[in-house]
Structure formats: C-alpha cells, structure tokens
Length: 56
Image (tube, rainbow, N blue to C red; front, side, top):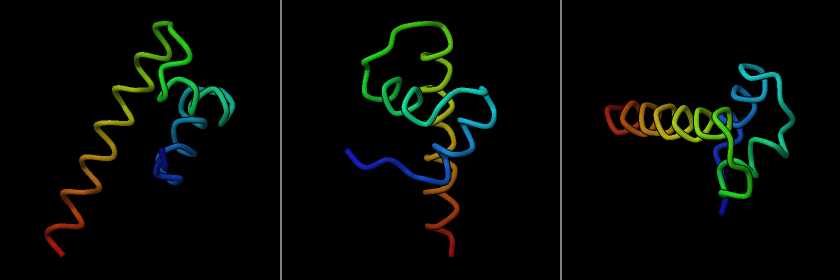
C-alpha cells in the first residue's frame, strides 16, 4: 500500500520514531499503544487532507 509521504514524515517527527516504524505500525506489523496512536493519527490526517482537497 502507498502511504501519504507528507503524513508519514509528520508522524515520524511527532512521535520521534523512524519512518520504518510508522509504516510497520500502519500495516499492522507493530502492536503497541504508540502504534495504535500513529494509525489513528494517520487516518485523521489523511481524511483531513482528502476533505480539504475535495473543496478545491
């Protein structure tokens, strides 16, 4: 699956983790509270961006 690079990069900054950790969290290969938070934030950020782009 292709992930939004801007969102992935922002999550690496926000959580202080590697890009690989973020991708593995999104794909379900990591299970922890941080991984769950990353996945939740990714969905929220992606949805927000998609909604914004629809209004343009």
